[in-house]
Length: 232
Image 1: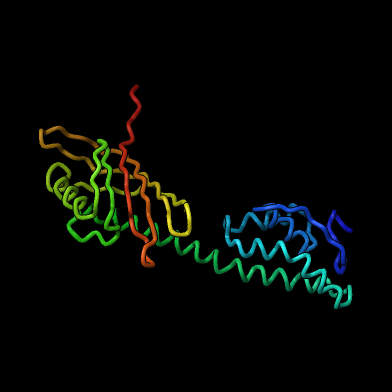
Image 2 (image 1 turned 90 degrees about the vertical axis):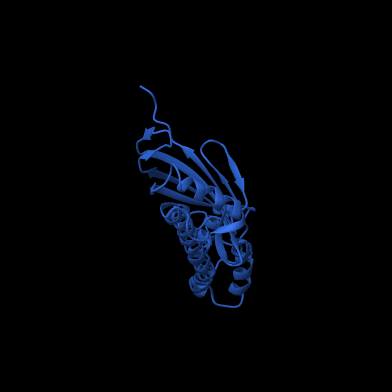
């Protein structure tokens, strides 16, 4: 026993039930024979909730390898650990790649919204679902893609004509494998209202609900809020 972990070839191993990152760290400590802090650093590189199947597989790994140790010489225990670790990584890698791809696809969908905004929403909203809901800074809500397009086109032909908005920052969070939430801070160009009132550049924050339907990421809802400048 070393650092609270079994030596290579050790055939007795018991572990209290754990979950999440603790489980990963505990199992990887055992697989590699490394210190706990090293395992935690490795676990930190994994996507949260990367794969329930992997969690379950790691739960069973000690028992499986104990059985394997009974069939091989003790000096090969390190080889068994290496094989198990490589196999575990082969399960993780595709999900990490998939998560990265999904993040990029969600960002691309949101970018299409801003491209459409800057073009006055003249083109089709193929980046949105049919039940797209749009909530404007004044609290008005428009439901349905057709109705939303009609409304924003009217606005961009009047007081928002020629208006543009540039993304300042964006972050993406995933509620599930098919639902993402995007929070975007943007800066709009100066505008002049129909009554002649002029407004300078303003910062706004939008929340997007983006869902995956038919293999594509589409905006289901967006909510725009003006970021007010604190009065002095």
